[in-house]
Amino acid sequence: MATYYDIFGQKVQYLSSDPANLTEGQVWYNSTSNTAKVQGFSTGSWSTGGSVPTATNFIGSFGSQTAALAFNGEIPGAGGNQTQQSLSYDGTSWTATNPTGPLSTSGQGARGAGTLGSGIASSYQGGGGTPAAYTDVKEWDGTSWTAGTSHNNRQSNAMMASAGSQTSTAIFGGTSESDPSPRVNTEEWDGATWTNGGNLNTGRGASGGSGTLTSSICVGSDSSPFALVEEYDGTSWAAATAYPSAPDASSRCTGATQDATLAWHRGTAATYNGTSWTAVGTLSTPRISAGAAGSFTEGLCIAGGPPNTAAVEEFIAGPITQTITTS
Image (tube, rainbow, N blue to C red; front, side):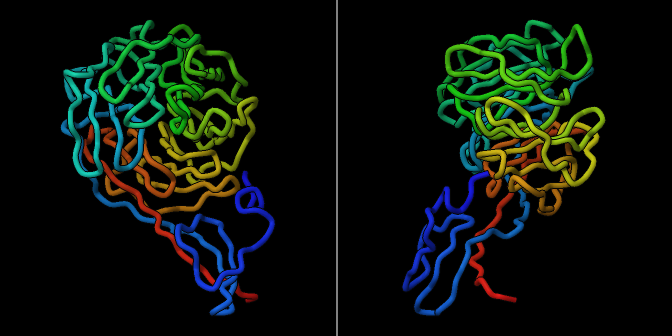
């Protein structure tokens, strides 16, 4: 985890007034009020966002709280109907990108990374569990989806470092149609090829994944131990502090790096600073297998289930300037 010195240098700023554009963890001395101060964040709260057009479980997503893309998933229907939907979000409402940019593969359980203007989607579970769909990769250019390079391992419901980019991300975990045991595989994407990375210490599927290629986090599992968390540095995975409740399946998370993560499971939600988890309220609509976008201070929980829901919730953690005292 980055230290104060890494971010701001070795000297505490000596200022006549509080600075603008503060960053969490920033420390300064206000010579006018004769006080030392630090910038933190409130625990935050959840509020209702714009619902997706159709209740959807196992939906994929990437982007920010006010510029997100959601895609694929399972919509209501006998036996579950796989869908090719592709939806963009402006912070208020969702707009279908079809037919200008439909996904060419229907499926559920896909994961994504990138921004509304440039993203990547991987690891669909196709209709009827179609094996070929497990390695399917699509790239998004802000207007349309195109076929990408398939990854090496058939991993259904694998996680992706969602704050990664279209040209730099990781995919990890999942299950295989030939072997139902959870996978430990990690694959790294450089924009041209997939290469094998370090294995997870404990295989798992349907977890939450976020961060970047060199700072990823994998949260929870769909099999015991349910609350397990691991961190990836681009080479190897290491055990981290477990999620504060015991998820039973399909956690989701979002965040720029492994030490700035927002995660949720059913009704619980918590933020992670690289060392410990802090509870940040509950979601109005408990769900698993939701889409995730945004940051650990501005998160977006998209649809999910069961039962399938169209509900979208937004998380906001506000800044707090605190005075440093000796008490």
